Amino acid sequence: MKIPSGTPRGMDLRLPITPLNIPRPPYTLIKPKGNAKGDRMKTAIIYYSYEGNTALAAKTIASAIKKPDVFEIKTVDQKKRTGFGKYLWGGGQVIRHVKPALKPLSVDVNTYDLVILGTPVWAGSPAPALVSFLAEKKISGKKIALFCCHRGGKRNVFIKLKKLLPGNTIIGEIDFIDPAHGSSEELGQKIGEWVKAIGA
Image (cartoon, rainbow, N blue to C red):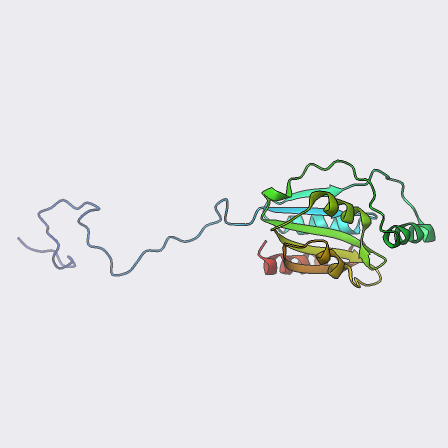
């Protein structure tokens, strides 16, 4: 029987060619990793926003992550203060360690791999509404990323937040200066790089 050119040595041409008797290639086939469900961390973005800056940052972060769940913390007191009175009221809450009452928020943080928390900076501290939320939910054993928005500097806001989150792993933090009045393109680029860095 004439053996066709190119036939692998040792191949029995009398047998039908099936997956069982085709010679194995001299290398290992590796199935490429895809983006199947479960490849990325299940992520929750939880934030408090008073004037819209933190809300804008949260929504931009959400657009850079694959299908996160987004939750906005809202206080029972929805009155909006303006001018100097706003700073007296907000700063007074921080100084007196006020924990404002919150509207019900249906979120089980235990079901998430990564929790991203956002706040405006009030008197160098996280907003009291976020402090109230953390006191209620008692987050523990999670990967946490932090972001804040400000006009006069982040100061010690992340240090104070970390003290409220014992037993968690802080994997990243980022601050934004008045994002509602800045470049949306620069904001998106900065957030995209950060999201990639924390692996979200």
